Length: 58
Image (cartoon, rainbow, N blue to C red; front, side, top):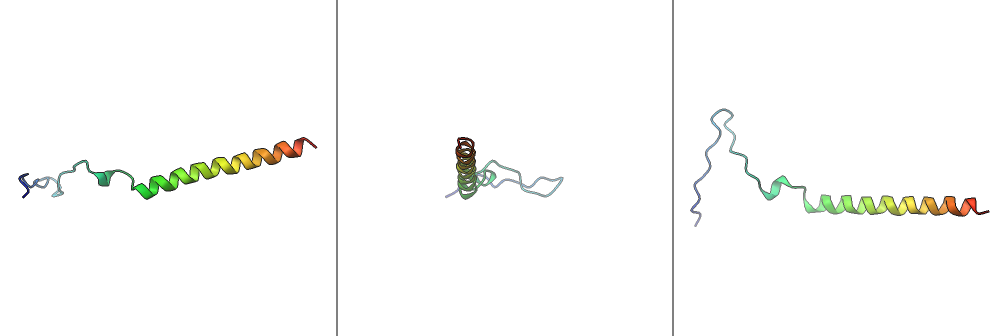
């Protein structure tokens, strides 16, 4: 059973009180996508660097 009392809404706005929950964080898939994009951009930049390095050596 749930022994915690139900939070009462804010009388000024009628909205329930804001609590810090897992929902306030970015979802895991978004964090994974950002990580993949950062890695992808670095790989692409490294490839461009390699192209310029090889182009300058001739």
